[in-house]
Length: 399
Image 1 (spheres, rainbow, N blue to C red):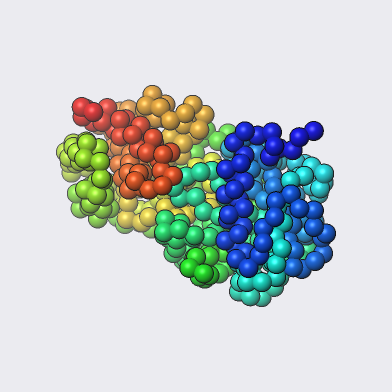
Image 2 (image 1 turned 30 degrees about the vertical axis):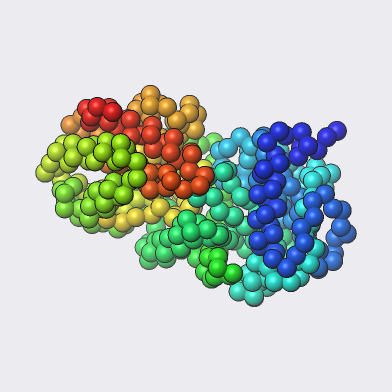
């Protein structure tokens, strides 16, 4: 029987990315693919490559023994993507058989300077890690699940290894510190364990959140509105008209920076039309997570456990998280198409909900277009084009 890496047609590039990322995290080490080095040598670290539907994006340590199974279960619970869900079958037992995960990446000289040795010094104990690289996208960053010598989870480390990733990781650390200043009933967020720099990278270590005992029974089509409201009102900014909310000025400024002249002109026309539509309508000002989706959360014991806070903002029109959630549920099922996005948003033109939906579209369009010229931005460029088309239709702007 051929190995997953041999049979999957798109695996080669993903494997190269995994190996290159490991090499960056072990700069004094030598990376070998397919090696069968003996376990127990502190200078040698062996990882198993976890296959996906199309390509491998996760490596798990063979030592300690419980770490691989726990890592697989965690990644399965944290995402809706089919290839990640497939990993859950490999973790059905308490331990992962080493015959299931046959492909190996081995680091020789792992006892030199490495990210894990840096984290061990910061956390005051020996650290082991699995590593995921996520799907190809402009803001992809390595994420490590950290374990102690017994295989118990210590937390997650997010690695800012590019200008975009550094900005995102730093933003998440700042957001989580702000969130920690509030008392929560519906919502649970990770806490910051450590933040440091290593070889020019920003390294943020956050606590692990349980995957959620109610997750399998939950209908992800329905957003957790009570938790979303709690977040929005925890940073209450009162009531204001759109023109006087500083957030709106930032959207205007972001639109001016769009490099494509046609899309910039179209977006600015939409903003003008939206300002007229908003008029003197009072809007509640609060906070939003900015990327609230089913795969960034879990539910358990009546609470929503929410991660990936790099898009968190305060001083925004309250209520936009709901629309981001519903649009992403729809597009994950039916693809990023105009009709799909349009059907996921309220259509009553004179309602506050409809206005908030249009403000949500502005927020994500400006976000996506700010990344459109970067390497790996094809996905966000497609989404920006689709959402801009929907916004034009809703505002009666000729695209």
